[in-house]
Amino acid sequence: MKKQELINVIKQKKSLLCVGLDSDLTKIPKHLLDAEDPIFEFNRQIIDATIDVAVAYKPNLAFYETMGINGLLSLERTVNYLEKYRDEVFVIADAKRGDIGNTSQQYAKAFLSHEGFDFDAITVAPYMGEDSVKPFLSYPDKWVIVLALTSNKGAFDFQFLETENKRKLYEEVLIKTSSWGSSENMMFVVGATQAQMLENIRNIVPEHFLLVPGVGAQGGSLAEVCHYGMTKDGGLLINASRSILYASTEKNFTEKAREEALSMQKEMAELMQKYI
Image (cartoon, rainbow, N blue to C red; front, side, top):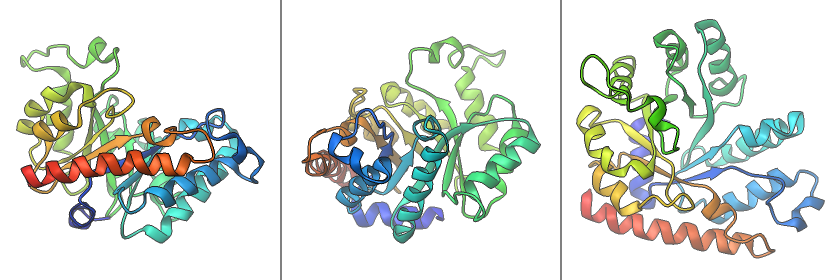
């Protein structure tokens, strides 16, 4: 999906919502466990309940890899199901890959090519440098989403260290990696619990989209994220996972998931009127 196509979807749906498909077999409604593929069935129903208000879906690979080949089959079925919505949703592999060049080439092929899962985007860790990221940028109309500033407690171990340029390490990551791609094929992960730092981040990467986890169950403020991070094109994909997926674990889980997604979309639409 090209940048303008993503912008069009955001404006059409009046939404910045990315639904994180962190689908856990131990947490999904028990009545789904009788299905042939419980995880896919859960994902399918969540997608059907939220497709008109979500602009993106983000399967977290860890929740699928933990189940071995069965989990990967559930992932494949989920991505194939989303294929029919190709023109109206952006699909992200939350894989956080990052390795030496020839290994990254294989990861890129696995997640971004037609021979692989054919996601629109993949999250990557930039620690190993340019040659570990560049292979992911070689696929037309595909996106690399670089980890920049995360919301976990351990973020302070490295990301805020000051460099010899008197900049924080996460700032160096933004400056350096943004020169490898463009705002047409690169985004950045910025945790919602670091919302006020979005203002500084926007000074460094004013045109890039930001993928923002941490709103919802992790307590990040949607209003603050939009205040500091929104651009005239939207510029944000705001992820919610647990707050939508597990709004209920009963048979009414789709209705409750939809209620939560609609609530977020309504607030997003109001904020978009203010900033766009």
